Length: 402
Image (cartoon, rainbow, N blue to C red; front, side, top):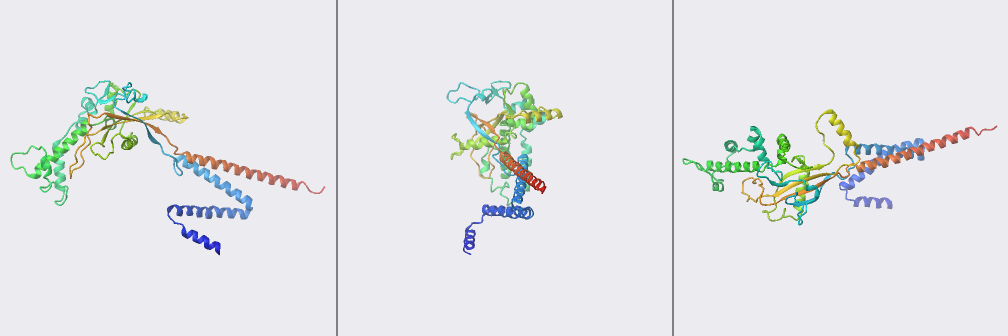
């Protein structure tokens, strides 16, 4: 009774949170499910043989389960693939004789990230909006290089008319005081405060659209108009050496890693001074890794799959993300934050990152190998026991009286 009371006091002292409860549920499940099977087998075959059969079954099931984990990337998982920052270079990465801030050799063939004044300059990168203006279709120019103030006014007026009078977003006389400070050309006859406020909003939204058009990056252009980026590269306007221009969507994980790293690095980003902690992501470039498919043909897909699967080691995969400090804009109460605008007086920061593939499936593979070996060992023990039983039975059968 003393031992039972001590056990009850220990159980009562345990804080049954998620971890303790989960551990107890697993142990209880193993004892009930596997223990009941072991008990039935042992009562029919004996303790030793029943235990050996149960152990073999457990290791066989664990090996199959871990193999499924490794194949589908579920269950017990290791470290996931991540991007690791290898170097940060401020300025033009193609200048290799910079003693104060020498760039890594892999960046030597990247052109000067400062925008070129003219297309075709091989020493720098052109602006995406210049490519649109030079080669874009009428629809592409209307999408990326046109600001329709009348359409903005019509959409804003329709949105404002649908709002209730008590809605704080409605353009009214009570909330129009600060907005009238903008330089809006008033009509000479009967311009109401609401109309002036609407004109100020249209002017602000049109300016934001113009900034977004001018700051369109090459990576964004490749994502929305890959034909223009390919034609610019074919004409020699994008001289990237061994690097490939990567879309913003494809480089999303690398951009997130670079942004988080900049906020922690000693470069002034993320400081308490709000006038110096913001930046704009420019372009992303990729080099290395397994070769991509040249097209979507059947033969190309099959051959690419065979070639990449036959590689024993993964080639190093690099990505460069370029950012630049933005111009500080004082926030206006009641308005959405203004779009970030690149500060042309600030240098471009190039962040070189390498892909770390991690060990995502390694725990499942190790469990499968270990369980498989123990399963084979238990099967060998069962086989050895059967041979010994057969030898003894044959010996007893042949040892009768002469």
